[in-house]
Image (cartoon, rainbow, N blue to C red; front, side):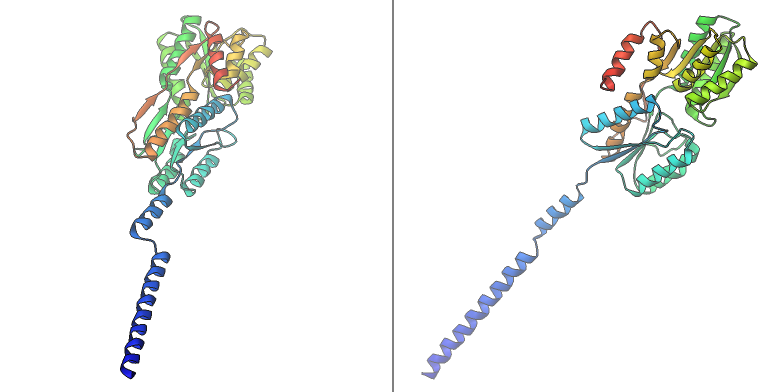
Length: 335
């Protein structure tokens, strides 16, 4: 009897041990995912949305607003997050650099930057490189070997178009002045130098070159001073439309008839051309600069091949084609 009872007891103990072990294994499986599950969770955690930071020179003019519109349209079409930032003025170089540094700290997927002063921006570009954030330069190029691409206008050729337009209107011996953007800004260097090359070759006399920092109000003040010093000038080229429109106010106030040429093809400039005030503007495509800049930045963020230089072209807008160009701009801005 004792032997039989011992056998039953032994069987019961073994059975309970087996059940306990199975329960323990089951609990372990429930609390610890398999290798495949861990890999899936890790992969899911690594899937981050692409975020592109577009940092322009300022957001206080139509030109940069059109760049912004193009950048945001690209973000929508490509299904990525795009944020467009800019300082209070194109001369606020340190403010722009701080914006770049902030976006690097936030670990954006890529940067698309229009540097106001490329030399001042290079340390921030180096920080982006160290953080493995690709940098696409838009509108303004820089001597930085690690840029993914430059997306923008052939500014020198655009300046030459302005020089040719003024030479055709004034002929040899015509007296002209140039208003340019902030000193040290290579975009305005190239535009001014392209115009100077053609003007000299065509026999125009450049009586003065003055900076007006891309601002309408300053453009007016600088032109007032120029008209006092050189009342007999016949033509004026400004390396952006804001300065051209400011200079135009001074010319109108002085009741002068002067051929006036701006650069950008902004909505306000086109409106002035249509009204018979501003003579012409050298149009680039700020919309394409924004759109193609984001497009290149997204490709770079995904490790895809990007062309080293993407030129968006220039053209002359005058009374002959202004209506057509206005229609295009209104469509871009949703007006």
